[in-house]
Image (cartoon, rainbow, N blue to C red):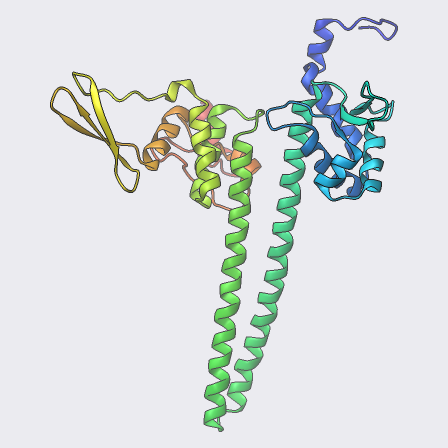
Length: 337
């Protein structure tokens, strides 16, 4: 498309990344110009203007104030910035009844996926920043307590002649050391939990391939298994039609089923006078996810999503991992000869 044309050709649209890419880029550029406080307000307002399913909802200023608790001044300010003629992220809608206050909604339905994606990324960044702040504070307290423990140990040596005081000081020093180590472990656990939740959220992103998402869900469960990480794996498996499972074994109609108390075994009774026990444990879901992914994360993917929180390893042990290339590059030369 030349600079004087008023027509957008399909090949030009595709070269720009498609409509979704254009809308997402426009939204990111507009929101990046807002102050941190305004970005926080926008994230909270977007939560009530777009449903998780991508449907838009119109609300008045007072409605949004009540939902977010930001105050009408902050709500009005961010609405005006986002509905400006040059931004066109939101727009005011005047109801037919002129007595009813203005409502605000997203400018176009095509903005809904981009808004959901931006808000998810914004929330992830905020959560990770908060986790890093807590980790840093705990590490500082641990370092300070470790320094106290070291001073107490030196003091116990100086007071060795006073046996009772020396023993008491030594016990206190050991207590402080154990407490410091415990706080360090808790800080590491919180870092692992934050990483696991981020992996779980990324695994369900529309911008991540299915096999990559399944591997990220598996790593989230290995790093910090909880309800959220398990849910991301189950969602990822269910997104793949290839992983739909049918249990075959009976030669007649199934007349009854029952679960074991721990939910890991399913018993089915059939008109063929047989009972079959099926393994439906969470471990079997992991095996299906590995079967569908059919590989492990590459070192580049590991560095992108997990970094140094965990050492590079095989998420699915039955598949090989990417070998480490030596600094001299000999492995690469050998592979091409």
